[in-house]
Amino acid sequence: MRACFLDAGSVGDRLDWSRLEAAVEDWRWYHATSDDQVRKRIAEVDVIVTNKVVIDRRALEAAPDLKLICLTATGYNNIDIEAAAERGIPVINVTGYATPAVSQHVLALMLAFATRWHDYDAAVAGGAWQRSEFFCMLDYPIEELAGATLGIVGYGELGAAVAGLARAFGMDVLIAERPGAESVRARRVAFEDVLAQSDYLSLHCPLTERTRNLIDHSALARMKNTAIVINTARGGVIDSAALIDALENGAIAGAAVDVLDREPPRDGHPLIDRKPANLIITPHTAWASRAARQRSIDAVAANIAAFRAGDDSARINP
Image 1: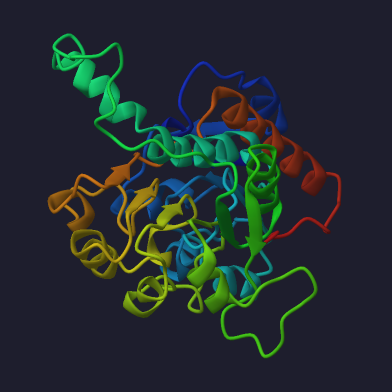
Image 2: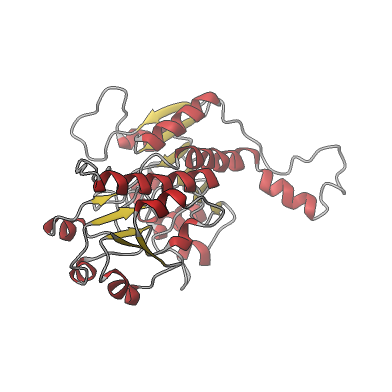
């Protein structure tokens, strides 16, 4: 079989590639692939491996031999699932590989707002502690996670892992029911009530037409003005303009995002161009521990091996 990895550079270095290399006899490795290079690079392959390169209907038409599409990520909005299904081409993602990394990143962002360590670090670097009248500085208010309420939107493996860590810190956890649901399941709380009660709101839902701009002006207006919004899901789940307005106008106290609706933001982005002090942005790194990246690569190798062995049960796992 012939395979290509269209954006191998996106999973970084210092990894063991041996299992993936052994999964297919003939590999073509590409550090990155632009939109206008996709059709040529997949024209004669049986297997595509991609992280974020878009494989749309037009690209699929240029790949007559294609038998399998493997994602090194959980999200699959970069693949035309319908067009692949029409051709009988399975699309397999990987799940669970980044759970420890993402969940610790969420807690790190919450702790950043609670402890204000980054502000104090900057103050020391600027000489403020050295000039302090007392042994300590109290310039930035410090809060405790214990007793605070965390609302979770999207209660899959990631949401559950974050909930477990939050409870270990003594937080009360609310699991949001799906927005617009006619009834509320046991141990869930209506989405609107989670917005209103949460001190921290962590987003873990996939990006679909139902969740696009889920956190908009209306949602943010329901929240406490002391609340913090954290997004490690997909950038499009939050309306960027609404978030900027809420941060600048004090409708919420802060936000931390690891994802944007355009990545990378080469031509600028409202959250970067107008970035207020109460917004933390990390460059889509929540998933990227070395261990998580290795698990992703090994999972792709296993998916290819299963497909070649005739196991047709593996498909997209939302």
